[in-house]
Image: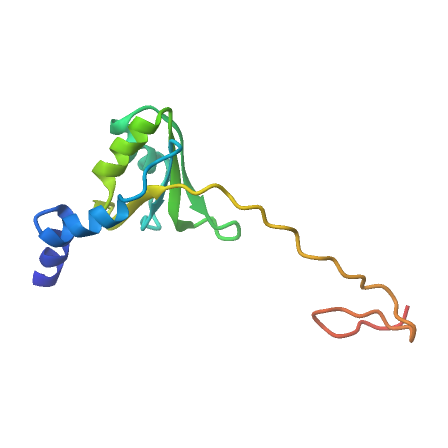
Length: 142
C-alpha cells in the first residue's frame, strides 16, 4: 500500500520528481492540435476517452486505437482539438495523470509516415512444374 501511495505522489504533483517528469515530456511545442495519449487502460472506451478530455476545449475527434483482430484497445489513442491552445491546455492538465487507474502521458502527435507496401513475388509455376508456397514450401503439380 505504501508503494502505491508513493507512486501516486510521484505522478500527482506532490513530489519534485513529478515536475521533472512533466518538464521533460513538455519540452516540445505543439504545431498541430492533435495529441497522442499513451498508457490507456485496455477497458477505456471512445466515449470515456472523449469525456476525460472534453473540459479543455472543443474536440474534433477522440479515438482509442484498437486491435483489428480482437477489438481490444492497444493502450493508446489520439485527441484532436479545434485549436492548438486547447490542445496545449489539455496536454498540461492531463500529462502524467491517472485515467481509469492508469497513468497516461500526453504528447504531440507525429505525422503519419508513409510506408511502402511489401514487394509482391511471383508464386507461379517454376520450370520444374512445382508452384512454390512461402508457408509450406510447395503445393504440388500444375
